[in-house]
Image 1: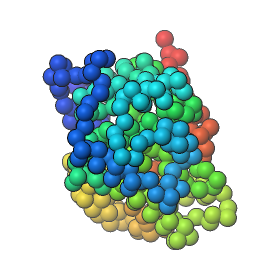
Image 2: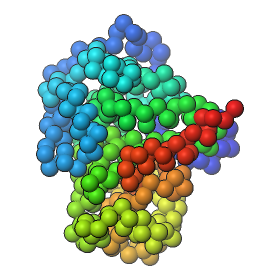
Image 3: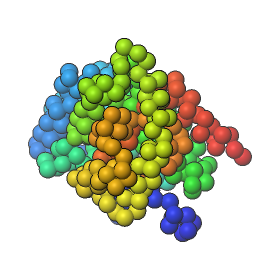
Image 4: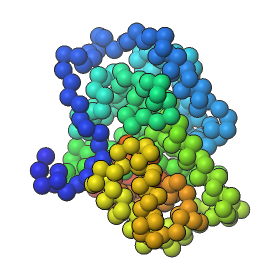
Length: 337
Ligand SMILES: [Fe+2]
């Protein structure tokens, strides 16, 4: 990687953990015998999200996939089970990895072969509400129901071919586009905000925060649900564009100073940021997280917040729009010689 570029582009990635390559899983040893405590943690995480008042806020694509995949609420599934249910549907294959947070370049190499990596690490009891690391529950529960669905498989198919051809700067944008769509994206369905991203779905605290924001926007009458909500979102975004740009610049600065390094710290410093910038924390900007239309220019400017809650989420008007917007950035890179 170009050292100068490395110095100027803040990636927000978790520090890479190099592992002993002999520890990595092979085609023959994909399965793990989990402890009773690990199955119990899985069961508690599963039960925590599997509630009608939470599920109603998740996108239909996820709900359909979940119904299809039929994950066992009490036991962590085997890789064989996952492949039996996913591969015939969309052609994607699951592989186990010992790498707890893989380098994006290696990961996209596998992705290009339609191989989805799942880690062998499961969060511990003290991380039930929030874990910055994508653990096995995130990988399996958050992503894999989707990988039985054609639309999601098509979305996931877009990233790797572009990433492998992209410049270093473009790669950072591609990672952010993936982060703010497949990991933390929102989508409109039936004129309501729905959670789309696997990171939000598998993260109890961030999911609750997001749903609370949906309710707040209604309670504070920021949006009139009798009208077109996405249109109103776009209007608010444009009206507050200047403040949003200042907040995005401020969030970048906080990241550079290492102040977004934990869940509590992250939110406290974002709240302080509003104050320092003189932006009233009310109305459209009055929540725990700012919702904005899926605007590629803004997404390119805001880093991924890994160790704390994301201060901004991006909403697509429809799945078709998500498809088209991602294509508008990724396709020209794929088609480049
Ligand atoms: Fe993920």
